[in-house]
Length: 278
Image: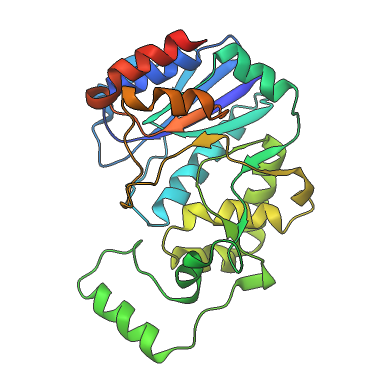
């Protein structure tokens, strides 16, 4: 079971190093996209025969299509390696495994060909995401007056409609899928550039675009509506809760393979405990 862990990060090379060490395995490689706004030099000492840095880096902004583009750029480089990975596992630099690396590889060995992602129907199960699709958003652009233009445009134009009659699904941006699924997504966006243009004007497109393309494809039956991540949004903030040692029981009992979010400042004791859990 050969896995390519794709990690999007922008800071804290020490935390990234710990994440890589926790998932190190003879059949695991790591592809690291470091936000172009960050100094990559502090990360480069982590490179080795299993750790590669994505060359085509871009500046990533919260809620913007740039997150999707960073992921796509990384997909291209994983495919260019010509290595026959069974799975690509998308992580952030603030994720951490909840199971041993042996258990993780064994899990995917027994679930070959599946795509693990949150795929809630936006029209019925995740309706709070509807304004993202129906209104214009300029999070991916940086010019003076963009918020005024965005507001004006949404006042005077009809609400947007999904291109290609796509049924939108999504929730969390994090997923684990096969190279077959990734190739399909890339080829779909190349064939239908209007879909990319639509999502370039969608806030939080990274939480919708990949799931939606796969859900509306011949591979819908491959989708398991579970990202395998434990994320706690109970604080009601724009970002999920940062876990501490107090969260150890909930994390261990979650049954998930991964969790976010962690920091070395707040979570070091917890990370030590997780390392000893299995």
